[in-house]
Image (tube, rainbow, N blue to C red; front, side):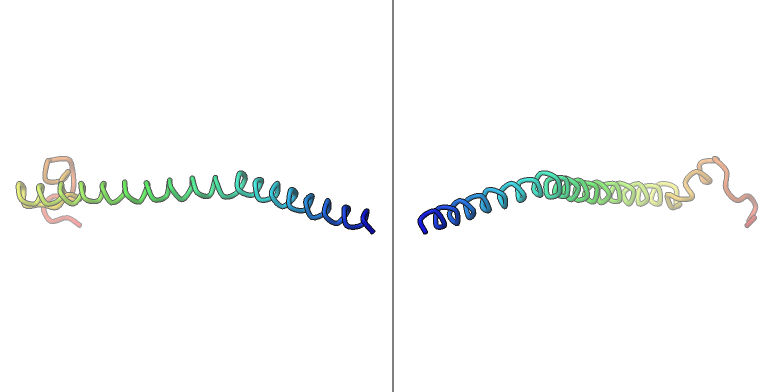
Length: 87
């Protein structure tokens, strides 16, 4: 009977060790890369917002200086675009 209790205790301890190992493997192989990916996605989003703010500012300045929007700025600067009302 004592041997059975010791074996059960050992089995529980081994089970706890095994679960800990599995959790560690999951954390290292799945959660850490996922967390890094999410952090990169957040940073990309912040960068996109900053770029958008810069583009909006360039658009406003181009409109105030030349009376044109950024998308048609190259045409206004002589870089091409429609001529004489062409479509």
